[in-house]
Amino acid sequence: MITIGITGTIGAGKGTIVDYLVKEKGFVHFSVRDFITKEIQRRGMPVNRDSMTIVGNDLRATNSPAYITESLYKQAQETGKNCIIESVRNPLEIEGLKKHSNFYLFAIDADPKIRYERVVKRGSSTDNISFETFVENEAREMTSDDPNKQNLSACIKQADYVFSNNGNFEDLHSEVEKVLSQITYKRPSWDEYFMELANTASKRATCDRGRSGCVIVKNRQVLVTGYVGAPAGLPHCDEVGHLFSKTIHNDGSISNHCIRTVHAEQNAICQAARRGIALEGATLYCRMTPCRTCAMLIINCGIKRVVCERKYHNGKESEEMFAQAGIELEFFFDEVQKYENQ
Image: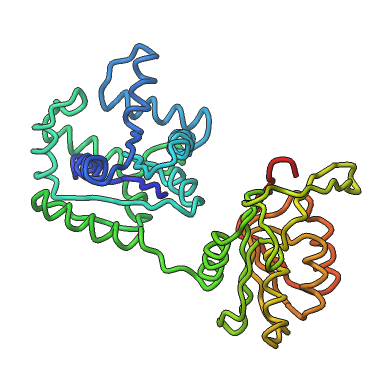
Protein backbone atom coordinates (compact mmCIF):
# COMPACT_ATOMS: atom_id res chain seq x y z
CA MET A 1 0.00 0.00 0.00
CA ILE A 2 1.47 3.35 -1.06
CA THR A 3 0.43 6.99 -0.76
CA ILE A 4 1.41 9.49 -3.44
CA GLY A 5 1.39 13.24 -2.93
CA ILE A 6 1.00 15.59 -5.90
CA THR A 7 2.53 19.05 -6.04
CA GLY A 8 3.26 21.37 -8.94
CA THR A 9 2.49 24.62 -10.66
CA ILE A 10 -1.02 25.87 -11.38
CA GLY A 11 -2.63 24.08 -14.32
CA ALA A 12 0.38 21.80 -14.87
CA GLY A 13 -1.74 18.64 -14.82
CA LYS A 14 -2.02 17.47 -11.23
CA GLY A 15 -5.63 16.50 -11.90
CA THR A 16 -4.61 14.55 -15.00
CA ILE A 17 -2.28 12.35 -12.96
CA VAL A 18 -4.97 11.97 -10.30
CA ASP A 19 -7.58 10.89 -12.87
CA TYR A 20 -5.18 8.33 -14.32
CA LEU A 21 -4.28 6.84 -10.94
CA VAL A 22 -7.91 6.73 -9.80
CA LYS A 23 -9.54 5.44 -12.98
CA GLU A 24 -6.78 3.19 -14.30
CA LYS A 25 -4.95 2.10 -11.14
CA GLY A 26 -7.67 2.10 -8.48
CA PHE A 27 -6.14 4.75 -6.22
CA VAL A 28 -8.37 6.54 -3.69
CA HIS A 29 -8.30 10.32 -4.11
CA PHE A 30 -7.86 12.89 -1.34
CA SER A 31 -7.56 16.60 -2.12
CA VAL A 32 -6.07 19.47 -0.12
CA ARG A 33 -8.16 21.75 -2.32
CA ASP A 34 -11.39 19.96 -1.34
CA PHE A 35 -10.38 19.93 2.33
CA ILE A 36 -9.86 23.70 2.31
CA THR A 37 -12.96 24.35 0.18
CA LYS A 38 -15.15 22.71 2.82
CA GLU A 39 -13.63 24.99 5.45
CA ILE A 40 -14.13 28.06 3.20
CA GLN A 41 -17.78 27.18 2.82
CA ARG A 42 -18.14 26.60 6.54
CA ARG A 43 -16.79 30.10 7.15
CA GLY A 44 -19.16 31.61 4.60
CA MET A 45 -16.38 32.96 2.39
CA PRO A 46 -16.36 33.09 -1.43
CA VAL A 47 -14.70 30.08 -3.03
CA ASN A 48 -11.79 31.59 -4.97
CA ARG A 49 -8.00 31.35 -4.98
CA ASP A 50 -7.62 34.20 -2.47
CA SER A 51 -9.87 32.35 -0.01
CA MET A 52 -7.99 29.11 -0.68
CA THR A 53 -4.70 30.79 0.25
CA ILE A 54 -6.06 32.64 3.28
CA VAL A 55 -7.89 29.67 4.80
CA GLY A 56 -5.16 27.15 4.00
CA ASN A 57 -2.51 29.34 5.64
CA ASP A 58 -4.80 29.96 8.63
CA LEU A 59 -5.41 26.23 9.17
CA ARG A 60 -1.66 25.59 9.12
CA ALA A 61 -0.89 28.50 11.46
CA THR A 62 -3.68 27.56 13.90
CA ASN A 63 -2.90 23.84 14.05
CA SER A 64 0.48 22.97 12.50
CA PRO A 65 2.14 23.44 9.11
CA ALA A 66 1.39 19.78 8.26
CA TYR A 67 -2.15 19.75 9.68
CA ILE A 68 -4.06 19.42 6.40
CA THR A 69 -1.96 16.73 4.76
CA GLU A 70 -1.55 14.73 7.99
CA SER A 71 -5.34 14.74 8.34
CA LEU A 72 -5.69 13.46 4.79
CA TYR A 73 -2.90 10.88 5.26
CA LYS A 74 -4.70 9.40 8.28
CA GLN A 75 -7.89 9.14 6.23
CA ALA A 76 -5.89 7.51 3.42
CA GLN A 77 -4.42 4.87 5.73
CA GLU A 78 -7.87 3.95 7.00
CA THR A 79 -8.89 2.89 3.48
CA GLY A 80 -6.25 0.15 3.34
CA LYS A 81 -5.72 1.00 -0.35
CA ASN A 82 -3.25 2.91 -2.52
CA CYS A 83 -4.10 6.58 -2.19
CA ILE A 84 -3.21 9.93 -3.70
CA ILE A 85 -3.17 13.32 -1.95
CA GLU A 86 -3.56 16.16 -4.42
CA SER A 87 -2.23 19.75 -4.14
CA VAL A 88 0.54 19.50 -1.56
CA ARG A 89 1.90 23.06 -1.39
CA ASN A 90 3.88 23.48 1.82
CA PRO A 91 7.43 22.15 2.43
CA LEU A 92 6.65 21.22 6.04
CA GLU A 93 3.66 19.21 4.82
CA ILE A 94 6.08 17.21 2.71
CA GLU A 95 8.51 16.85 5.60
CA GLY A 96 5.75 15.30 7.69
CA LEU A 97 4.54 13.02 4.90
CA LYS A 98 8.04 11.78 4.09
CA LYS A 99 8.37 10.37 7.58
CA HIS A 100 6.10 7.60 6.34
CA SER A 101 7.99 4.91 4.41
CA ASN A 102 5.13 4.32 1.98
CA PHE A 103 4.91 7.94 0.78
CA TYR A 104 6.19 9.31 -2.55
CA LEU A 105 5.96 12.87 -3.86
CA PHE A 106 5.21 13.60 -7.52
CA ALA A 107 5.73 17.10 -8.94
CA ILE A 108 4.47 18.34 -12.30
CA ASP A 109 5.23 21.47 -14.32
CA ALA A 110 4.59 22.88 -17.80
CA ASP A 111 5.03 26.05 -19.84
CA PRO A 112 3.05 28.97 -18.24
CA LYS A 113 1.02 29.77 -21.38
CA ILE A 114 0.04 26.13 -21.83
CA ARG A 115 -0.96 25.98 -18.19
CA TYR A 116 -3.08 29.15 -18.44
CA GLU A 117 -4.95 27.77 -21.44
CA ARG A 118 -5.69 24.64 -19.41
CA VAL A 119 -7.09 26.49 -16.38
CA VAL A 120 -9.30 28.63 -18.62
CA LYS A 121 -10.74 25.48 -20.21
CA ARG A 122 -11.12 23.93 -16.76
CA GLY A 123 -13.41 26.81 -15.82
CA SER A 124 -13.63 26.25 -12.05
CA SER A 125 -14.65 29.03 -9.66
CA THR A 126 -11.00 29.78 -8.90
CA ASP A 127 -9.81 29.77 -12.53
CA ASN A 128 -11.92 32.57 -14.11
CA ILE A 129 -9.00 35.02 -14.24
CA SER A 130 -6.79 36.89 -16.72
CA PHE A 131 -3.32 35.68 -17.69
CA GLU A 132 -1.79 38.55 -15.69
CA THR A 133 -3.70 37.52 -12.56
CA PHE A 134 -2.75 33.90 -13.21
CA VAL A 135 0.95 34.86 -13.24
CA GLU A 136 0.56 37.02 -10.12
CA ASN A 137 -1.23 34.24 -8.21
CA GLU A 138 1.47 31.77 -9.06
CA ALA A 139 4.27 34.16 -8.09
CA ARG A 140 2.60 34.61 -4.70
CA GLU A 141 2.50 30.84 -4.17
CA MET A 142 5.94 29.96 -5.52
CA THR A 143 8.08 31.19 -2.61
CA SER A 144 7.60 32.23 1.01
CA ASP A 145 9.69 32.50 4.17
CA ASP A 146 6.62 31.83 6.31
CA PRO A 147 6.56 28.10 7.25
CA ASN A 148 2.75 28.14 7.28
CA LYS A 149 2.38 29.47 3.74
CA GLN A 150 2.59 27.91 0.30
CA ASN A 151 5.98 27.46 -1.33
CA LEU A 152 5.62 25.54 -4.58
CA SER A 153 9.23 26.04 -5.60
CA ALA A 154 10.53 24.37 -2.44
CA CYS A 155 7.92 21.59 -2.74
CA ILE A 156 8.95 20.74 -6.30
CA LYS A 157 12.59 20.51 -5.21
CA GLN A 158 11.62 17.89 -2.61
CA ALA A 159 9.78 15.70 -5.12
CA ASP A 160 10.85 12.10 -5.62
CA TYR A 161 9.75 12.30 -9.27
CA VAL A 162 9.20 15.37 -11.48
CA PHE A 163 7.08 15.28 -14.67
CA SER A 164 7.05 17.78 -17.53
CA ASN A 165 3.59 18.05 -19.08
CA ASN A 166 4.04 20.09 -22.25
CA GLY A 167 2.88 17.22 -24.45
CA ASN A 168 -0.26 15.11 -24.63
CA PHE A 169 -1.97 13.00 -21.99
CA GLU A 170 -0.65 9.75 -23.43
CA ASP A 171 2.95 10.89 -22.95
CA LEU A 172 2.26 11.90 -19.35
CA HIS A 173 0.46 8.62 -18.60
CA SER A 174 3.42 6.70 -20.00
CA GLU A 175 5.86 8.54 -17.73
CA VAL A 176 3.67 7.98 -14.68
CA GLU A 177 3.39 4.29 -15.53
CA LYS A 178 7.19 3.95 -15.64
CA VAL A 179 7.52 5.52 -12.20
CA LEU A 180 4.74 3.37 -10.74
CA SER A 181 6.58 0.28 -11.94
CA GLN A 182 9.67 1.43 -10.05
CA ILE A 183 8.01 2.21 -6.73
CA THR A 184 5.56 -0.69 -6.61
CA TYR A 185 8.35 -3.17 -7.23
CA LYS A 186 10.82 -3.19 -4.37
CA ARG A 187 13.54 -5.79 -4.28
CA PRO A 188 13.42 -7.30 -0.78
CA SER A 189 16.37 -7.08 1.60
CA TRP A 190 17.95 -10.35 2.76
CA ASP A 191 16.01 -10.15 6.03
CA GLU A 192 12.75 -9.55 4.15
CA TYR A 193 13.53 -12.40 1.80
CA PHE A 194 14.19 -14.94 4.56
CA MET A 195 11.23 -13.74 6.62
CA GLU A 196 9.01 -14.32 3.60
CA LEU A 197 10.41 -17.87 3.39
CA ALA A 198 9.54 -18.33 7.08
CA ASN A 199 6.00 -17.14 6.40
CA THR A 200 5.76 -19.53 3.48
CA ALA A 201 6.90 -22.39 5.74
CA SER A 202 4.13 -21.42 8.19
CA LYS A 203 1.52 -22.42 5.60
CA ARG A 204 2.49 -26.04 6.30
CA ALA A 205 1.62 -25.64 10.01
CA THR A 206 -1.11 -27.91 11.38
CA CYS A 207 -2.37 -25.93 14.39
CA ASP A 208 -4.74 -23.05 13.73
CA ARG A 209 -3.89 -21.52 17.10
CA GLY A 210 -0.75 -20.11 15.56
CA ARG A 211 0.51 -21.19 12.16
CA SER A 212 4.14 -20.22 12.56
CA GLY A 213 7.15 -21.02 10.43
CA CYS A 214 10.89 -20.75 10.90
CA VAL A 215 13.98 -20.53 8.70
CA ILE A 216 17.58 -20.81 9.91
CA VAL A 217 20.22 -19.23 7.70
CA LYS A 218 23.97 -18.87 7.63
CA ASN A 219 26.02 -16.87 5.11
CA ARG A 220 22.77 -16.12 3.26
CA GLN A 221 22.14 -19.80 2.69
CA VAL A 222 19.10 -21.63 4.10
CA LEU A 223 20.18 -24.45 6.42
CA VAL A 224 16.83 -25.78 7.66
CA THR A 225 13.18 -24.82 7.96
CA GLY A 226 10.44 -25.73 10.39
CA TYR A 227 6.77 -25.18 11.10
CA VAL A 228 4.31 -25.83 13.92
CA GLY A 229 3.04 -29.41 13.93
CA ALA A 230 2.61 -32.55 16.02
CA PRO A 231 5.57 -34.96 16.46
CA ALA A 232 6.07 -37.28 13.50
CA GLY A 233 3.41 -39.97 13.29
CA LEU A 234 1.08 -38.39 15.88
CA PRO A 235 -2.28 -36.74 15.09
CA HIS A 236 -2.38 -33.04 14.29
CA CYS A 237 -4.55 -30.35 15.88
CA ASP A 238 -6.25 -29.76 12.56
CA GLU A 239 -7.33 -33.41 12.67
CA VAL A 240 -8.28 -34.05 16.31
CA GLY A 241 -8.39 -30.63 17.97
CA HIS A 242 -6.20 -28.85 20.50
CA LEU A 243 -4.63 -30.12 23.71
CA PHE A 244 -4.53 -27.21 26.15
CA SER A 245 -2.33 -26.42 29.13
CA LYS A 246 -2.90 -23.40 31.39
CA THR A 247 0.13 -21.27 32.31
CA ILE A 248 0.23 -18.59 35.03
CA HIS A 249 2.89 -16.01 34.24
CA ASN A 250 4.98 -13.89 36.61
CA ASP A 251 2.81 -10.85 35.94
CA GLY A 252 -0.29 -12.78 36.97
CA SER A 253 -1.64 -13.20 33.46
CA ILE A 254 -2.97 -16.59 32.39
CA SER A 255 -2.61 -18.17 28.97
CA ASN A 256 -3.94 -21.38 27.48
CA HIS A 257 -1.38 -22.97 25.19
CA CYS A 258 -1.84 -25.85 22.83
CA ILE A 259 0.78 -28.47 23.79
CA ARG A 260 -0.02 -31.02 21.09
CA THR A 261 2.41 -29.37 18.68
CA VAL A 262 6.15 -28.84 18.41
CA HIS A 263 7.03 -25.19 17.78
CA ALA A 264 8.50 -24.11 14.45
CA GLU A 265 11.86 -23.19 16.01
CA GLN A 266 12.10 -26.56 17.79
CA ASN A 267 11.28 -28.46 14.60
CA ALA A 268 13.92 -26.55 12.64
CA ILE A 269 16.58 -27.21 15.28
CA CYS A 270 15.60 -30.92 15.40
CA GLN A 271 15.94 -31.12 11.62
CA ALA A 272 19.43 -29.67 11.85
CA ALA A 273 20.41 -32.16 14.58
CA ARG A 274 19.13 -35.14 12.56
CA ARG A 275 21.05 -34.03 9.50
CA GLY A 276 24.25 -33.13 11.33
CA ILE A 277 23.99 -29.44 10.39
CA ALA A 278 25.88 -27.11 12.72
CA LEU A 279 23.96 -23.94 13.63
CA GLU A 280 26.85 -22.07 15.25
CA GLY A 281 26.71 -18.38 14.22
CA ALA A 282 23.45 -18.77 12.27
CA THR A 283 20.43 -16.44 12.08
CA LEU A 284 16.91 -17.66 12.87
CA TYR A 285 13.82 -16.04 11.31
CA CYS A 286 10.38 -16.53 12.89
CA ARG A 287 7.00 -14.84 13.20
CA MET A 288 7.22 -13.66 16.83
CA THR A 289 9.43 -13.79 19.92
CA PRO A 290 10.28 -17.45 20.64
CA CYS A 291 8.92 -18.97 23.86
CA ARG A 292 11.19 -19.76 26.80
CA THR A 293 11.81 -23.36 25.72
CA CYS A 294 12.62 -22.34 22.14
CA ALA A 295 14.86 -19.55 23.44
CA MET A 296 16.91 -22.02 25.52
CA LEU A 297 17.36 -24.32 22.51
CA ILE A 298 18.36 -21.38 20.32
CA ILE A 299 20.97 -20.31 22.85
CA ASN A 300 22.42 -23.79 23.29
CA CYS A 301 22.70 -24.60 19.58
CA GLY A 302 24.87 -21.54 18.94
CA ILE A 303 22.50 -19.32 16.93
CA LYS A 304 23.71 -15.73 17.28
CA ARG A 305 20.89 -13.67 15.76
CA VAL A 306 17.11 -13.95 15.92
CA VAL A 307 14.84 -11.90 13.64
CA CYS A 308 11.12 -11.80 14.44
CA GLU A 309 8.29 -10.24 12.51
CA ARG A 310 6.53 -9.07 15.69
CA LYS A 311 6.78 -9.31 19.47
CA TYR A 312 4.95 -11.95 21.49
CA HIS A 313 2.92 -10.56 24.41
CA ASN A 314 4.59 -12.97 26.85
CA GLY A 315 8.04 -12.82 25.27
CA LYS A 316 9.78 -10.57 27.81
CA GLU A 317 11.56 -13.46 29.53
CA SER A 318 12.94 -14.74 26.24
CA GLU A 319 14.12 -11.23 25.34
CA GLU A 320 16.01 -11.03 28.63
CA MET A 321 17.55 -14.49 28.11
CA PHE A 322 18.78 -13.54 24.63
CA ALA A 323 20.31 -10.33 25.99
CA GLN A 324 22.15 -12.26 28.73
CA ALA A 325 23.40 -14.81 26.19
CA GLY A 326 24.64 -12.12 23.81
CA ILE A 327 22.20 -13.03 21.04
CA GLU A 328 21.11 -10.21 18.77
CA LEU A 329 17.30 -9.89 18.69
CA GLU A 330 15.52 -7.79 16.07
CA PHE A 331 11.89 -7.11 15.16
CA PHE A 332 10.45 -6.04 11.81
CA PHE A 333 7.56 -4.29 13.57
CA ASP A 334 7.46 -2.90 17.08
CA GLU A 335 4.04 -4.48 17.59
CA VAL A 336 2.73 -7.19 19.86
CA GLN A 337 1.17 -10.27 18.28
CA LYS A 338 -1.45 -11.87 20.48
CA TYR A 339 -3.59 -14.86 19.62
CA GLU A 340 -6.99 -15.47 21.17
CA ASN A 341 -7.06 -17.45 24.46
CA GLN A 342 -3.31 -17.16 24.87
